Amino acid sequence: MKNLNILILSCLTFALSCSTAKEEVQVDINGILDQYSADNYALNPLSATANGINDYNAQLAIDIGDEHIKQSIALNNRYLDTLKVISYNSLSENDKLSFDLLQYKLEMDNEYLNNKYIWISRPVDQFVTSFPQKFALMASGTSFIPFNNEQDYRNFMERMKAYAKWTDQAIENMQSGLELKNTNPRSAMLKVPAQLKPLYEKEPSENTLYRPLKNMPEAMDSSTRAQLESDYTHALETYLIPSYKRMNEFLENTYIPNARETTGLLDNANGEEEYSYLLRKSTTTNISADSVYKLGLSEVARIRKEMDSIRVITGFEGDLSAFFNFIRTGEQFFPFTTAEEVLDRYRSFETRMEPQLKKLFNTRPKTKFEVRAVEKFREAGSNAQYKRPARDGSRPGIFYETVRDPLKYNAFEMEGIFIHEAIPGHHYQIATQYEADIIEFRKTYFAGAYSEGWALYAESLGVELGMYKDPYQYMGRLNNEMERAVRLVVDAGMHAKGWTREEAIAYVLENQPVTPLVAEQRIERYMVWPGQATSYKIGELKIIQLREKAKKELGEQFDIREFHDEILKDGAMPLTLLESKIDRWIERKSL
Image 1 (cartoon, rainbow, N blue to C red):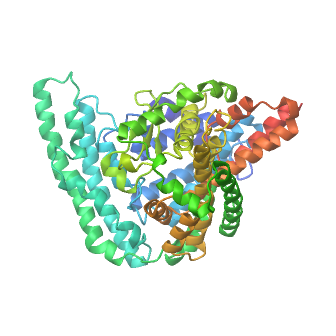
Image 2: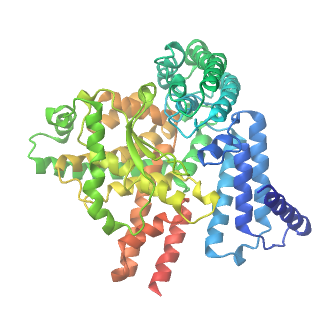
């Protein structure tokens, strides 16, 4: 591999040195992309480990530090320069797609890095994507980090040391954010101490960070085990646990008291420009905040009418607001006594859908998946989510659900949640991408509007999958769709139109049968992750639009299985590229 990388770099250097600004050279685009993936993994070791590349398992990038940012921009610019001298018109259709994907990623990443948006200046928040939470999950041994032998444990000890440096950098960045008036909202940050304190206050027997010591490989001899337990415990108590304590003390004593009390990005330095970028990044379109807001209002109105029709079908007497309250509180919607009962209900859905899945998909992933409850330390800011499988098959895809109290777990939207997070939603899309016969770069490419758009689109297939026969489960599906439509309104409302947190929570409660606590958690997620929540609905509507276009233009030639294969088989991509790809497919089918 090393010799191949040197050869590719030599060829690229020669091509660039011999070309002029107007000349194009023919270069192996797959070789360039493979080399980019290798260089990117070297710069981002966690990404390498997550994708089965174990060359950097003892490393952790301080990716919010100036040096790493400079290196990332330099890497991106080097490959952008390379793309400029490639003869694009001579590429195959598949290679053009690879070229376009790389160019799009490099340009969007550079804009992010040059402006030091969001997680660079605000690297800690209450949502599950916050790196302290993600690293705790890695440390627990239930993520993609391997703990199969002594070296794996010692590798992670090195990552603990690096995490201590990451913590110091994060505190420095957040301190600068306070000075530059660029912070997360105080109301959201107040949730973080409850997530961090168990990681340094609990005794080892109850602390999730010690879990790998309880699950050491059986083949390890006793003397190695004893030494490793001592060394690993020392690393935990010297580097990792003090890091969580140090971060929490900074948050409680300095950051939270001085964080902004307002809601949206408008109140942050350069907030308007940042939100414009984040909308483009999340939706992979050039949609404006005003257009997002208006589209959301239109979709909310449409879905409310359909919700009201379900109210009529059930025979409920009362208006839609009363119907929402009934669904929130009715005894029939709370059938569980244990968390395992909740998980077993989810596990039963795949078997029920199996006969219909064959009618909607030619190609289905071989990768397995499991249903699990979210760990206790992540519950505070967590909701249903899908965890990607290991590329080598050593870990399945995982659908995590938060079951804080099974007696209070409302069952009315379970079918829609499962379809979205597991089958045929995220699990089908992500596992298919991993298993596809495409180059490494495209196996790991992520586009939120594509991925989340597919998962929401999958929910719309529920009737065809034999689900939603209970009108309340169909109401759950509508509630899921409504949630994504509401997101368009409240996300743009908070970050572009000056809505307050309280106004946004009230809008959620007005349009969805959820509790005030759930509404609060959702709004605080959108507050710290601007733009991301808009990707679902934008992506779903694009896929539906493409499906209707294909049906209209192909007529009897249209096959839903072929359409789904065409959407999924090349992996994630920006919606603009997806639309061009489907247009070419329609054209070929029409010949």
